[in-house]
Length: 80
Image (cartoon, rainbow, N blue to C red):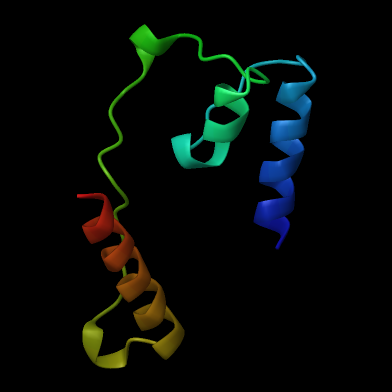
């Protein structure tokens, strides 16, 4: 929950014009569309290559980690 709270805090700071932020398009799309946030430095943006996970051998994989990996794979497949 702290990560979500931190992300919301960053959005609030930048919506009040207190600086620059880099974030996921899906998180800020509504604010950009409504004009509350502006895209800047587009020429400096690198394409997102996706997430990379490094984890121990599969034979002792924690069930929670397995669920997380499956979730990321499904989300990645849905995007393309």
